Length: 107
Image (cartoon, rainbow, N blue to C red; front, side, top):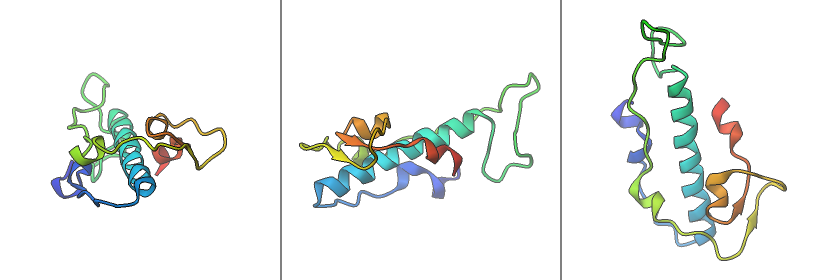
């Protein structure tokens, strides 16, 4: 990815509010997953074609997005936070947040 757009370059907001900090970290983790999913499909930012494929039909190689170190260190919330009833987002669930995240793949 372009260095200036790499998700791992998003600075630590060092938020004093544990709920907001956990939501931000979970959102960032879900974005990493969504961006890598799109890259695996062959979709590239600024690509010449919508889907870049290798000669054998597989998506062209790419450098995957990674989480910033600060986001990996953000702990789970003590009390469950429900943002969406029935939400099944695993990145949010890891921090005791009930939310959906699949829509990020269509952004």
